[in-house]
Structures are given as structure tokens and as C-alpha cells.
Length: 249
Image 1 (spheres, helix red, strand yellow):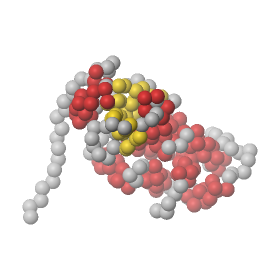
Image 2 (cartoon, one colour):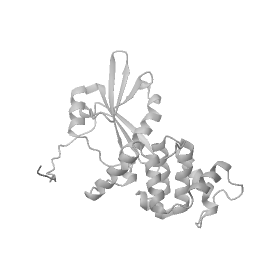
Image 3 (spheres, one colour):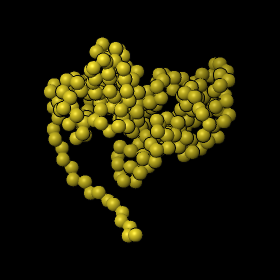
């Protein structure tokens, strides 16, 4: 796949949502356009309104109830994207879009498919972004606005499996920040056993950053030492049947 710029990714998302409309939302696991704009926008690191504007750019070219930007000519760089990709069918375009938006591209797409086969209800593209990449990118766009964090250097530790997503460092001090995402304004969040143990060990150096309400207007709450504050965590044990495959050599 050729290198595609961030703007081109945003335009492709708009083209996809315009062309496939409600069918495209269902394919990706979204329940509304607002939710799709928010999640895709934050996952890419652009304003959600940009995704909406690009959808509106293409709306006059497709049969839907929206008029879009019908009073002016389409911008040239959008025409180029349209000419190159508008003929793609739903399945092919969906795979392309996922590969462009997912941070780990092919790997995340494969994981999504494997989880679906295993019956994981949270395996949709939308849900994976909400609980992961979109929430993490939201944090990256906001953390400098938090007075306590503004002078700290940041390191992405999501791939290290250390019990928090970001390490914030200033001189001899560092904080661990675990990021969670929620589609609704209210609901529940869970910590893995490793996250819980790390929060217990680090105490006041561990933060929980929760992004809420992706389905409408995202906002966040920051919890210092989440195990020792206003949140109450209950231990939940689940019995899991693990399947393995054995071959004799």
C-alpha cells in the first residue's frame, strides 16, 4: 500500500461514510454518524468535524437524504480520492479503511477477525477503537491541558504490557497513566489484574484517565490513585475455557 497522508485518510473516511451511509455504519459497528465522527476523528488524531465535512463533501454524489456541500465545486484533492477509490465495494473499502485507521494496521485487523470467531462481543472496529486507540489519542490531545502534566515528557507504553498506557516523566519523578474509553456518559470500567496491581504499587503516582461519551460529545475524568479514592472496584472472577491445539512430532 502506498503511503497515504493523514488528510487523505480523513477524506477516505468521509467518502466511505457518504457512499455506504447506514450500511457503512453497521459494517464498522457504529450506531450513529456522530459516534463515527468522534471515534474515527480521535483515532486518527484529527477533529471529528473534519470527518463530517469530508462526508458532506461527497454527499451530492450519492443517493441519500443529505444535501452536503452542493453549492460549490468539489475540492481538487477530494476529486482525486473519489476517482481512485469511489468504485470500491463495501467489504473491500471496509478492509482498506480499517488498515488505514488502526495503528498496527494488518495486525489489528487480524485480531479483530480472530476475536469475532471466538465470540468476543467487543470485537467490532468501533468498539476496539473506543476502548483503545481513540481514547489514547484523545488523551494525547488533552494531557498538556492538565496542570499537573504540562511539564512532563510522555512515553507510549501501550505495547509494553506494564499495567499503564503512558509514562509521564519529569526529572526524577514519573507517573503512570492508564486510559479507558466508554461509548456512554455513564457505565463501568474494569482493570486487569496487572493494572490493578500496578495501581496498588504506585499509589499516588498512578492515574486513571477515563474518556466518556464517544457517542455524543466526549469528555474525560482524571482519577489520582484510583484504588484509594472515590472509585470502588470489586473483584470479579471468571472461569474461562481455553482451547489449545496439539500436534505430535
